[in-house]
Length: 252
Image 1 (spheres, rainbow, N blue to C red):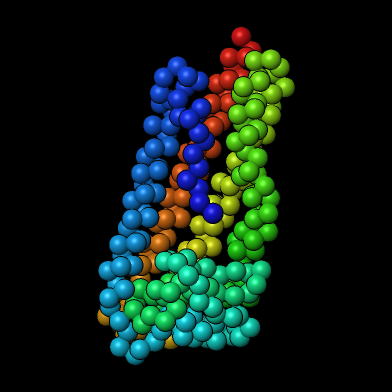
Image 2 (image 1 turned 90 degrees about the vertical axis):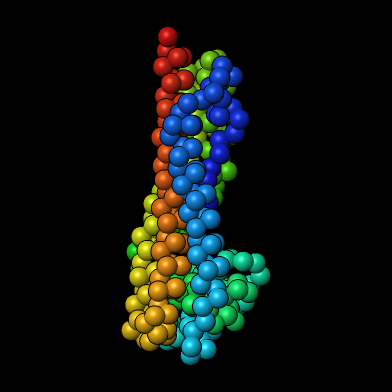
């Protein structure tokens, strides 16, 4: 789930009276950071996609090695289309690796595959942040769909009835669920990378000089989750300022 939430032109401009500086000052720096982090993970992956493991280990084989090293044997590993579309699906208990990872022997692919295997191990061990993240996915999805309609409806009609200010706040609360999801995601992703690095080092999946590529890819990927949280937090704060300002205007 991406936290790069854009609340529409209505919130980009201050109620039609000019540029909304809260977006430029609060959210835009986080958005730029997010774009930089995304570009960096792609460039780092491409860089180490050309560095191959001497032992010929593929991404799928590396993921299987991590699972077995942690006593997890019931997780399927499948190939999926796209680039960097790798993920672990806890509902199906399956690791899906992209074309550039599944059969690749690159250090970048092995790092990504081990990371996804780390998520599967988290699921098997009932790692608390991962369990919380999985549990709040349904309500987060509902909240993300309701947040903007409620905020827009609340602000537009707040001049007719003060009740609608609370409708706008309900929308902000719904958006806050996305922020909560990003907050819980951060330790989950960092822990999966920690497990991946430990497995690579302890299991000798890569030689010492090859480990650098896998670690750099994982660190670059971690920054994307930090950026996603930054965007979500700043956007939440901005929406609170907008609704709070509308509340003060309506009381005058």
